[in-house]
Length: 127
Image (cartoon, rainbow, N blue to C red):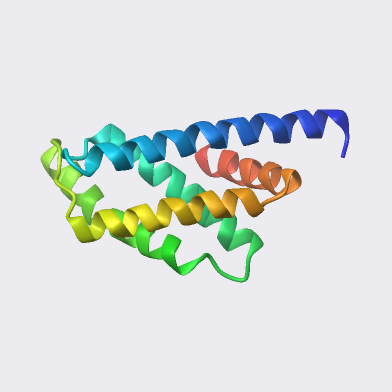
């Protein structure tokens, strides 16, 4: 891997670590307080991007990650409709917690080259 690609994958790994930290902080917060739109965005971004990575580089995304992704849909609908905060049930919190821990594992297993491919895919989707 060239020095530029190595620096780029290191930079992406640092960004992922930042999102991981934010996702874990959101989990701690929503355990006892309603989830805000901003917290939903942080959590769903981390889960979705790990799901994309798992979908692309594994035979299929891990089941715990899929369950967490699926749980986010009704919360998005609620937050979009109300514009306010929403309570997360204990069962859903457990599922989201398992999903975030699974996402951590997905990111750890992907190589620097894999991270560059995922970043490219996500950039194309966002443009």
